[in-house]
Image (cartoon, rainbow, N blue to C red; front, side):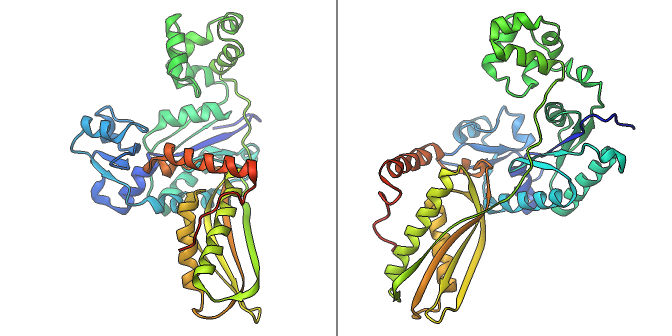
Length: 382
């Protein structure tokens, strides 16, 4: 199979990621209608293919899902492992791919342009997929194409746990029979509007006049027409792990009072969490540092599910402190650092009532933005 000097883009998607991690950790769940999420007020973060047969889909209220399939199994036992497995896959791809983008916790784009001079890109990508499966036991689908859009659509067509190659020049042929809502970004409203004027498939869309589409849908109409032709110019954005956000405090007098130390620790964790939210990032690792009066310095860190919430970071900081501190010894300096930062969405927080939680933190941050980041702090570190 030969490639022209066109772009070569691979799209990797970890199939039903949350469900798959649960099944790796508990193989007895395989083949059963499985719902991942919070049972009481939560929503379905993910569901197995067996559950989808009952009309269940992600983001559906859990109560609705259980009405549709009362015998479904609800779990989120592996919540802490989702970030771990995402990191494993990220590291495998980072070791192999010349350029990649981490689009979310379970989705990656790889730009392999130019590799055809040295390797057979399709076979190389098949081998990479197999390495990920061997090391994680997770199912993964991918597609290889000439741009990000085609690669993403083709990956969906390759599921579950398969792969597909759309050679350059075959994009329109591949797209033609698909319904127009297979185009990324075409939601229910646009899909209904297109069907109302007789456009059901991508072929139907491609045969329309771009001027008519632009007149009806504005600039988006022209964008839709370009996509129907298989045209997409989105770049693979290089993935770089941001370094860290940290704060530390050298005390005016050495401290041994655990209540004062806890109060300081809480306030420092609040400050770095606030900075994290302002940068629109989440953290996958937290560390605490202690320096004693003789300048001996120790630190301890732990990986965590990606988050930017104070109430999830503070308990981890306290836990690290108590593991680290030589009880009774005075402390000269203390610090908190968040690392493994990413723009990745906080997908695992679908297990909680995030709308209410996000509203609370937005209100807190609004006050801090207006009156200063020390305007609101917890009253005590106990």
